[in-house]
Amino acid sequence: MALARNTLVAAIIGVLVLVVGVIGGAVVGLRYFGGDDAVVADQVPDPGPMLELGQFTSTLADKEIHVIRLNITLELASPMALDRINASGNGWTVMIKDEVIKTLKDQRYDVVRFTEGMEKLKLDLKTRLNAILPRENGEAFINKVLFDEYMTQ
Image (cartoon, rainbow, N blue to C red; front, side):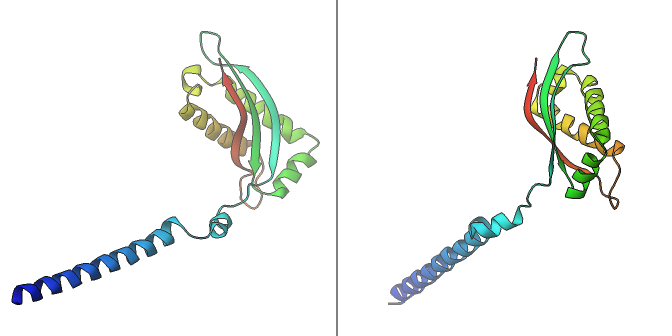
């Protein structure tokens, strides 16, 4: 009788642990991995204003002849930054394009042909362009450098 009673108690405890585990797993799963898509969409910020610079083709800094060709779009920090660049009568745009060309000329084929090198090039461009552009309230103008097209040869 004592053995049957101990088995019954163990079975009840086992079922309770199983139920609590399933409920806890469901709560954790919904909280961290599921939920409302609208909440997730609200957490992703919209991109800032975009400035299309156009296509660039340049030789690279190698002994052999290698070429890079890409389309560049800049995500700017604010509409005010876009207005300021456009209001300069293309002065800022020309300076930006000149800096892009100089940056491309410094690149090596064995670096920029891989994704890691492409991301480094984006960071270099962002850093160099933000260094030549004015700041608005201490903020840099450029948030991201984006490539619409990217080809090395």
